[in-house]
Length: 262
Image (cartoon, rainbow, N blue to C red):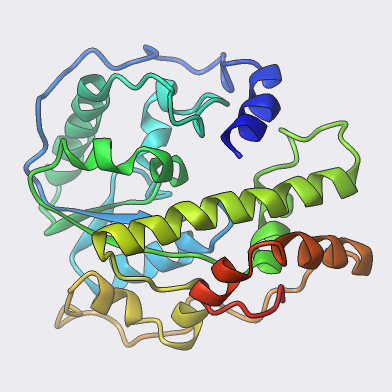
Protein backbone atom coordinates (compact mmCIF):
# COMPACT_ATOMS: atom_id res chain seq x y z
CA UNK A 1 0.00 0.00 0.00
CA UNK A 2 2.90 2.39 0.68
CA UNK A 3 3.99 1.94 -2.93
CA UNK A 4 0.53 2.88 -4.13
CA UNK A 5 0.56 5.97 -1.94
CA UNK A 6 4.00 6.95 -3.26
CA UNK A 7 2.88 6.61 -6.86
CA UNK A 8 -0.14 8.77 -6.25
CA UNK A 9 1.51 11.56 -4.30
CA UNK A 10 4.91 12.00 -5.94
CA UNK A 11 3.61 13.26 -9.33
CA UNK A 12 1.75 16.03 -7.51
CA UNK A 13 4.98 17.79 -6.58
CA UNK A 14 6.46 18.45 -3.17
CA UNK A 15 5.15 21.86 -2.21
CA UNK A 16 1.42 21.99 -1.64
CA UNK A 17 1.44 25.69 -0.73
CA UNK A 18 4.45 27.35 -2.36
CA UNK A 19 3.03 30.84 -1.80
CA UNK A 20 2.85 30.50 1.98
CA UNK A 21 4.91 33.12 3.86
CA UNK A 22 7.49 32.29 6.48
CA UNK A 23 10.33 29.78 6.63
CA UNK A 24 9.88 26.21 5.44
CA UNK A 25 11.00 25.05 8.90
CA UNK A 26 10.75 27.46 11.87
CA UNK A 27 14.11 28.72 13.13
CA UNK A 28 13.32 28.48 16.85
CA UNK A 29 14.24 25.12 18.30
CA UNK A 30 13.62 23.18 21.51
CA UNK A 31 14.55 19.63 22.49
CA UNK A 32 11.32 18.61 24.18
CA UNK A 33 7.83 19.87 25.03
CA UNK A 34 6.87 19.48 28.69
CA UNK A 35 3.33 20.88 28.57
CA UNK A 36 0.71 18.06 28.62
CA UNK A 37 -0.73 17.21 25.20
CA UNK A 38 -3.73 15.24 23.95
CA UNK A 39 -3.19 13.51 20.61
CA UNK A 40 -6.15 12.33 18.54
CA UNK A 41 -5.00 9.86 15.89
CA UNK A 42 -7.47 9.80 13.01
CA UNK A 43 -7.67 9.91 9.20
CA UNK A 44 -8.90 12.95 7.30
CA UNK A 45 -12.68 13.13 7.02
CA UNK A 46 -13.24 11.39 10.37
CA UNK A 47 -15.26 14.21 11.94
CA UNK A 48 -12.53 15.04 14.42
CA UNK A 49 -13.05 18.79 14.24
CA UNK A 50 -16.42 18.26 15.96
CA UNK A 51 -14.75 15.88 18.41
CA UNK A 52 -11.97 18.34 19.25
CA UNK A 53 -14.37 21.26 19.66
CA UNK A 54 -16.44 19.22 22.06
CA UNK A 55 -13.39 18.37 24.16
CA UNK A 56 -12.37 22.04 24.24
CA UNK A 57 -15.89 23.07 25.27
CA UNK A 58 -16.10 20.53 28.07
CA UNK A 59 -12.57 20.60 29.51
CA UNK A 60 -9.60 22.94 29.95
CA UNK A 61 -8.23 22.20 26.48
CA UNK A 62 -7.11 24.36 23.57
CA UNK A 63 -5.49 23.84 20.18
CA UNK A 64 -2.31 25.20 18.66
CA UNK A 65 -4.46 26.22 15.67
CA UNK A 66 -8.19 26.90 15.40
CA UNK A 67 -8.49 23.60 13.50
CA UNK A 68 -6.57 21.77 16.24
CA UNK A 69 -4.03 20.86 13.55
CA UNK A 70 -0.57 22.09 14.47
CA UNK A 71 0.69 21.06 11.04
CA UNK A 72 -0.89 24.24 9.67
CA UNK A 73 1.70 26.29 11.54
CA UNK A 74 4.67 24.71 9.74
CA UNK A 75 5.07 24.84 5.96
CA UNK A 76 7.29 21.76 6.01
CA UNK A 77 4.44 19.65 7.38
CA UNK A 78 1.92 20.72 4.74
CA UNK A 79 3.48 19.34 1.56
CA UNK A 80 1.75 16.71 -0.54
CA UNK A 81 4.29 14.14 0.66
CA UNK A 82 2.99 14.47 4.22
CA UNK A 83 1.60 10.90 4.19
CA UNK A 84 4.93 9.32 3.30
CA UNK A 85 6.39 7.63 6.36
CA UNK A 86 9.92 8.35 5.11
CA UNK A 87 9.31 12.10 4.76
CA UNK A 88 12.02 14.15 6.46
CA UNK A 89 10.68 16.11 9.44
CA UNK A 90 12.82 18.66 11.26
CA UNK A 91 11.23 17.89 14.63
CA UNK A 92 13.29 20.42 16.56
CA UNK A 93 12.02 23.13 14.24
CA UNK A 94 8.44 21.89 14.50
CA UNK A 95 8.62 21.81 18.28
CA UNK A 96 10.17 25.24 18.28
CA UNK A 97 7.32 26.65 16.22
CA UNK A 98 4.74 24.91 18.37
CA UNK A 99 6.38 26.14 21.56
CA UNK A 100 6.25 29.69 20.26
CA UNK A 101 2.51 29.33 19.55
CA UNK A 102 1.93 27.80 22.98
CA UNK A 103 3.60 30.80 24.58
CA UNK A 104 1.36 33.15 22.56
CA UNK A 105 -1.79 31.25 23.57
CA UNK A 106 -0.87 31.10 27.24
CA UNK A 107 -0.20 34.81 27.50
CA UNK A 108 -3.98 35.20 27.67
CA UNK A 109 -4.73 32.17 29.84
CA UNK A 110 -3.00 28.92 30.71
CA UNK A 111 -4.66 25.61 29.82
CA UNK A 112 -4.31 22.12 31.24
CA UNK A 113 -3.85 20.50 27.81
CA UNK A 114 -3.24 21.27 24.16
CA UNK A 115 -5.11 18.99 21.74
CA UNK A 116 -3.41 18.06 18.47
CA UNK A 117 -5.07 16.06 15.68
CA UNK A 118 -3.19 16.59 12.39
CA UNK A 119 -4.07 13.41 10.40
CA UNK A 120 -0.56 12.70 8.97
CA UNK A 121 0.72 12.11 12.51
CA UNK A 122 -0.72 8.65 11.97
CA UNK A 123 2.30 7.56 9.92
CA UNK A 124 4.91 8.88 12.37
CA UNK A 125 3.23 9.13 15.76
CA UNK A 126 5.82 7.09 17.66
CA UNK A 127 8.64 9.41 16.62
CA UNK A 128 6.51 12.49 17.29
CA UNK A 129 5.46 11.33 20.75
CA UNK A 130 9.07 10.74 21.75
CA UNK A 131 9.52 14.53 21.82
CA UNK A 132 6.81 15.02 24.47
CA UNK A 133 7.29 14.55 28.20
CA UNK A 134 3.59 14.07 29.00
CA UNK A 135 0.79 13.11 26.63
CA UNK A 136 -2.40 11.09 26.25
CA UNK A 137 -3.68 9.46 23.09
CA UNK A 138 -7.07 8.45 21.68
CA UNK A 139 -7.87 6.88 18.32
CA UNK A 140 -10.83 7.78 16.10
CA UNK A 141 -12.11 6.24 12.88
CA UNK A 142 -15.22 6.67 10.76
CA UNK A 143 -17.31 4.32 8.63
CA UNK A 144 -16.03 4.00 5.04
CA UNK A 145 -18.95 5.62 3.22
CA UNK A 146 -19.24 8.69 5.42
CA UNK A 147 -15.46 9.06 5.67
CA UNK A 148 -14.97 8.97 1.89
CA UNK A 149 -17.95 11.23 1.30
CA UNK A 150 -16.52 13.80 3.74
CA UNK A 151 -13.13 13.72 2.02
CA UNK A 152 -14.65 14.28 -1.40
CA UNK A 153 -16.56 17.26 -0.05
CA UNK A 154 -13.74 18.92 1.86
CA UNK A 155 -10.26 17.54 1.28
CA UNK A 156 -9.47 15.42 -1.73
CA UNK A 157 -10.89 17.27 -4.73
CA UNK A 158 -7.80 19.42 -5.56
CA UNK A 159 -5.41 16.48 -5.29
CA UNK A 160 -7.54 14.35 -7.61
CA UNK A 161 -8.25 17.04 -10.18
CA UNK A 162 -8.68 15.49 -13.63
CA UNK A 163 -8.98 11.92 -12.34
CA UNK A 164 -12.23 10.03 -13.16
CA UNK A 165 -14.56 10.10 -10.19
CA UNK A 166 -14.93 6.32 -9.93
CA UNK A 167 -11.15 5.94 -9.80
CA UNK A 168 -10.98 8.53 -7.03
CA UNK A 169 -13.64 6.74 -4.98
CA UNK A 170 -11.86 3.40 -5.38
CA UNK A 171 -8.53 4.92 -4.36
CA UNK A 172 -10.06 6.55 -1.29
CA UNK A 173 -11.56 3.20 -0.33
CA UNK A 174 -8.10 1.63 -0.51
CA UNK A 175 -6.76 4.53 1.55
CA UNK A 176 -9.45 3.84 4.16
CA UNK A 177 -8.15 0.28 4.42
CA UNK A 178 -4.54 1.42 4.71
CA UNK A 179 -5.20 4.12 7.32
CA UNK A 180 -7.56 1.87 9.28
CA UNK A 181 -4.78 -0.70 9.45
CA UNK A 182 -2.50 1.93 10.97
CA UNK A 183 -5.19 2.88 13.49
CA UNK A 184 -5.78 -0.72 14.51
CA UNK A 185 -2.05 -1.23 14.90
CA UNK A 186 -1.87 1.80 17.23
CA UNK A 187 -4.69 0.40 19.37
CA UNK A 188 -3.31 -3.13 19.52
CA UNK A 189 0.35 -2.26 20.04
CA UNK A 190 -0.06 0.57 22.53
CA UNK A 191 -3.50 0.08 24.07
CA UNK A 192 -4.74 3.50 22.99
CA UNK A 193 -8.50 3.85 23.57
CA UNK A 194 -10.71 3.84 20.50
CA UNK A 195 -13.72 6.14 20.10
CA UNK A 196 -15.22 5.92 16.64
CA UNK A 197 -17.04 8.93 15.22
CA UNK A 198 -20.27 6.94 15.41
CA UNK A 199 -19.75 6.28 19.11
CA UNK A 200 -19.02 9.97 19.63
CA UNK A 201 -22.32 10.85 17.97
CA UNK A 202 -24.22 8.60 20.36
CA UNK A 203 -22.22 9.62 23.45
CA UNK A 204 -20.30 12.89 23.07
CA UNK A 205 -18.50 12.58 26.38
CA UNK A 206 -17.03 9.16 25.50
CA UNK A 207 -14.04 11.07 24.15
CA UNK A 208 -13.51 12.70 27.55
CA UNK A 209 -13.43 9.25 29.13
CA UNK A 210 -10.91 8.08 26.52
CA UNK A 211 -8.61 10.99 27.40
CA UNK A 212 -9.23 10.49 31.14
CA UNK A 213 -10.66 13.99 31.44
CA UNK A 214 -13.42 15.32 33.64
CA UNK A 215 -15.75 18.02 32.40
CA UNK A 216 -14.97 21.39 33.95
CA UNK A 217 -17.43 22.59 36.60
CA UNK A 218 -18.37 25.52 34.38
CA UNK A 219 -18.60 23.44 31.18
CA UNK A 220 -21.88 23.64 29.25
CA UNK A 221 -24.16 20.63 29.17
CA UNK A 222 -23.28 18.11 26.49
CA UNK A 223 -24.93 18.77 23.15
CA UNK A 224 -25.03 16.87 19.87
CA UNK A 225 -21.85 18.32 18.41
CA UNK A 226 -22.16 16.16 15.32
CA UNK A 227 -25.48 17.61 14.28
CA UNK A 228 -27.90 15.79 11.99
CA UNK A 229 -27.07 12.66 10.05
CA UNK A 230 -24.73 13.17 7.10
CA UNK A 231 -26.42 13.25 3.70
CA UNK A 232 -24.24 11.23 1.35
CA UNK A 233 -23.41 12.65 -2.06
CA UNK A 234 -22.05 9.33 -3.32
CA UNK A 235 -24.07 7.71 -6.10
CA UNK A 236 -25.40 4.18 -5.86
CA UNK A 237 -22.58 3.00 -8.11
CA UNK A 238 -19.95 4.77 -6.01
CA UNK A 239 -21.35 3.23 -2.84
CA UNK A 240 -21.05 -0.15 -4.48
CA UNK A 241 -17.40 0.55 -5.33
CA UNK A 242 -16.69 1.43 -1.68
CA UNK A 243 -18.53 -1.63 -0.37
CA UNK A 244 -16.76 -4.00 -2.76
CA UNK A 245 -13.34 -2.49 -2.01
CA UNK A 246 -13.49 -2.45 1.79
CA UNK A 247 -14.99 -5.94 1.75
CA UNK A 248 -11.43 -7.02 0.97
CA UNK A 249 -10.59 -6.21 4.62
CA UNK A 250 -13.32 -7.89 6.71
CA UNK A 251 -11.01 -8.01 9.73
CA UNK A 252 -10.74 -4.22 9.78
CA UNK A 253 -14.49 -3.76 9.35
CA UNK A 254 -15.08 -6.10 12.27
CA UNK A 255 -12.43 -4.47 14.46
CA UNK A 256 -14.04 -1.03 14.17
CA UNK A 257 -17.60 -2.32 14.28
CA UNK A 258 -18.33 -1.66 10.62
CA UNK A 259 -19.75 -5.01 9.54
CA UNK A 260 -21.05 -3.36 6.39
CA UNK A 261 -19.69 -0.47 4.29
CA UNK A 262 -22.58 1.77 5.32
